[in-house]
Length: 157
Image 1 (spheres, rainbow, N blue to C red):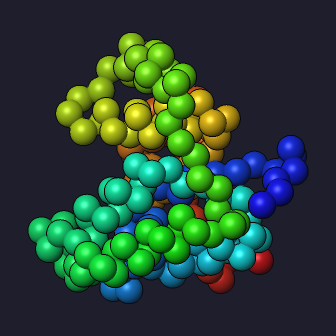
Image 2 (cartoon, one colour):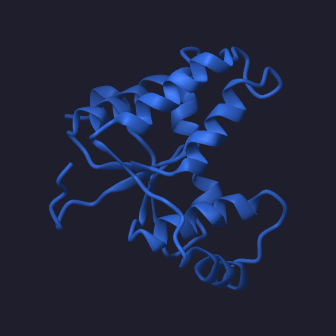
């Protein structure tokens, strides 16, 4: 995948992957639209291993979703994202821990917020500053990133 320097790439948050897989969600169609556009290469998206492992953990747990999927189906879905030539994969680098510690000092997390900070640190060490999510409140206080809520499919070109 070739991304022009002027084109902004955005990380897909785990909730979008979950809503794409959950046909009963009110966020299903906007999630399908966003991911489909990324898989086709119409927009620049990226994903981190943390998103894929969180997706697996959520979608296979009947306590977390109404319609869980089988482990084998979650594995297939993860493989689809991982194999996509049009969705960039970003990884933790040697710079992650210094960046994470910097973010912890700036935004002291409570409990589960550490995982959001880890994802943000992964984004930043990969020069990603945009995230697509429906969990705006999880990310809105972080000045380093731009939070985008996917629109309804009928609103997108």
